[in-house]
Length: 118
Image (cartoon, rainbow, N blue to C red; front, side, top):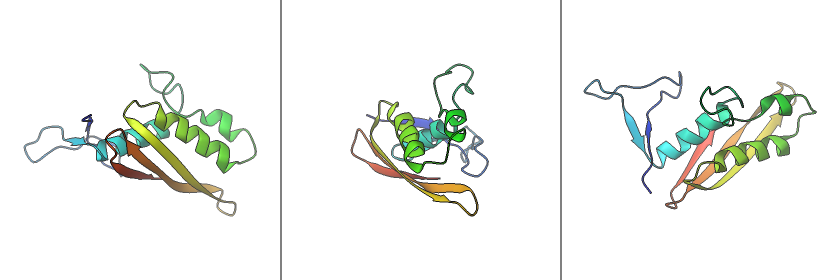
């Protein structure tokens, strides 16, 4: 299955123009990784037309930090997309900086690998 998405600037998360001045698009596997990143960055209820899209960060941030719970929430959100066959988050919690970083390894239904750095 071919996946096409609007290309977003990874630094600003804004639309990008192609060399002709049109809105740029991307295909899989980049499109799949970008879609997973977008869904995992969204806070549940934030998207006006899709209230069920996004991670329920309010629920995750009100309990003692657990990378397992966060990874499970990210995996569930990534797998909601029909063209994602496998998503495996790996998270590292830095207690000194109180930041969590990691990566989500993705395989789409075409068998193409990609990843999202958190």
